[in-house]
Structure formats: structure tokens, C-alpha cells
Length: 450
Picture (cartoon, rainbow, N blue to C red):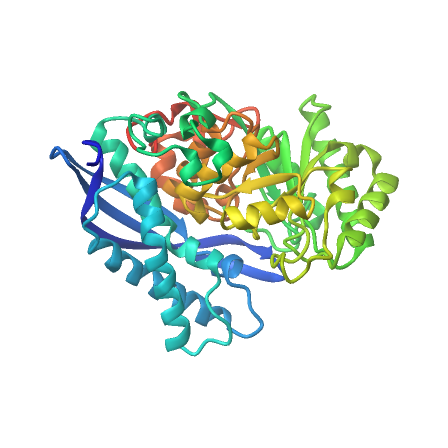
């Protein structure tokens, strides 16, 4: 016997949209100029006959999800789109009733089988990674949660307790969670306002003199202008990870520009996060970088809140990359490696002291791993995938419902603001910061909140 609130899929429609970047984004050694966004419009029916339609959106993210020396970028993007389409078709044929978390986790083996089949059919040099499979199917997971909440007339974050989920967290995690449900690790009301991290890419100009070719679209052209435009308080700095001196000098350069910009606003306190996109060869590089940064720019060093996954994502292939010494200096969060509970436990063993959640890995996984990180007292943050429009609102909603998260990322407003336009007209205070913060407290509608 299931719950009367359980749902099944009765209709499913794939959607796509493209985002063109106003300025290139250097990512993991590659330069990104546009992205394909996958969307799903999904209708569910409850056991007692209520129906509703929800949507889920996410950038395809092939550069991040499937970087490869053996599979070309265009091929990775093409097989990801094919996987998305096939996963939508497979989901449409599912007649099971359940809570969105159970439906998504139950469908995941089918989605992964499709990924394996596509890898073989296209004779890829390496198989589609689990991470990329999660990215390609995450819009379906999001749409399940959105439609479920709408069918019940509730915000879906109010639907994670025992009256909706038939099993407690011990079913999804470990016996240590017996008698606990997700409502213990999520907020009934979203945080009202949250600081927004502004991305400072490795190619981004810091001052007007760094602008070689102005875009001329009316938006800021350099970091100084962005600080004034959005009254920023949080900056995420992209680093290269293969040249300690360049990386340390880049942080020092950002600090000089930020100090000038913040002084104009009368501000003396702000925050950095650092992202190497896995390019550091080992933990010794990180330690050398931290020491050099502390020497070269001690005030910048003091402002660093955390470091995103600095070394290779395959933790089992690199057991030597233990983070204990670096994490004793600054929190080091797992990101690309984090795909399931097994990878979470391995990351803890290897010394990671924090977790970066991303809705592009699926709403269900984000909720469960967010609960685990809180339970274990780890540093917790929500990261972006240059998510525009509805995808950004989904990510913002997750961040606002996790009690220990203090800020959110959202860089589509920098790189593809045109893709935000429709939703920004509805929620201007979520897409244009005030005092460096966005108004996440507005995300209270049925479904995912928007």
C-alpha cells in the first residue's frame, strides 16, 4: 500500500533552449561561449486523482560533466543530448507510483543503463561518466519534485517528512539516520536574503585598463564596475592550478581591485571562495599556494571562506591526494567527485571537510547528501553551473532551504543575462542583487517555489 500523495508520470515533454554568452568563460582549461539547456515539462497524477504539471531545467554542462582527452567536446555534447532524450522517453513509460525521491532513484539505474548503451553504440573512447549522466537527467528529477508539490498544492520542501516519504533516511543513507526524515535537514521557510557569489573568471578584466575589447552592452565590463553595480560582498575566484605564482598573484590582483571597489562603497568586509577546477596536481601544490598567498596578500588570504575541489575528480585513482593538511587551513569542499553516498564517504576519508551541492546532479541526491553533510558537521555550500532562468531559481531555492548555507552562486547574470530575462521580470530581486544579496525568501510557491 502506498500513500495517497504518491504520484506517477502521465505526460512528459522534452524542451531545449540555448544560452549565448556575452563574454567567454574559461573553465577547466577550456573556453565556453554558449550552452544548451535541457528542460522537461512533466505531468503527474496522485493516487487520489489530482494532477499537476511541473518543469525542470538545467544547462547540459558537457564541458564540466564530461571533460575528456578521448572524446571530443562536440561528441560529448551530442551524446549527452541523446541521453537526455532517451531518459525522457524511458521516464514517460514508467507507471510506478511513489514520492519523487523514490521515483528518481528508482529510475536512475535505467538512465545509467542508457548511458552505458550509448557509450557502446557510439564506441566512445571512454564511457559517459556518472556525473554527466546525472547532469543530463537532472531536469527530470527537478520536474518530478516540482510537479509533485504542485499536485499537492504545497511547496515541495514541505513534502519531505514522514507524512509524505514512506521511509526514513536510513533507507537512503545509513542506519545512523533511523527515525530521521529530510524535513529535519531543510527549512520550512527559505532564508529571506542570501549573499550572491560573483564569479571572477581567469579571463575576466579586473579594472578598466584590463578591458581589451569592450562589449558595450550596458553591463559592467570589469570587476570594479561589477562591485559598484551589484554592491558585491562575495567573490569566487577561478584559478589555473598549474602555476603557483600566477594563482597567488591573481588572488592578490583581485584583492587590490576589490579593495578599491569596496572602499568606494564604504565596505571593509567581504569574502572569497577559490576554485581550481581540479587542476592542482596534488595537495602540496595547494599548500604552497596557500603559503604564497598568505605571504603575498595576507588580507586576501584571511577573506577566503573555502576552496572547491582542487585536484582530480577520480578519488580512487588518486588516493595520494588527501586533503587533511589543506583542510586544516581552509575548508576544502568536494564537488566534481560527489555523485553518491559512496563518493561522499570516500571524500571524508581523504580529508575533505566540506560538500558542494549542485542541483545539476539531481534534486534528490542534493537533498540526501546535504542531509549527510549536516549530520556529519561538514561545511556546506551550493554551487552553480551557470544556471539561467528557472535553473537558477531551482538552485537558489535549494540553497535557501539548507540551514547551514550562507551564500549562493549565480553567474548566468554575468555570462548569459539574456537567458534570465523572462524570469527576471517576475523576480527582479532574485536576479539583480541589492547590497550584494538576492531575495530568496520569495521562493515559497507550490512545487520548487517559483
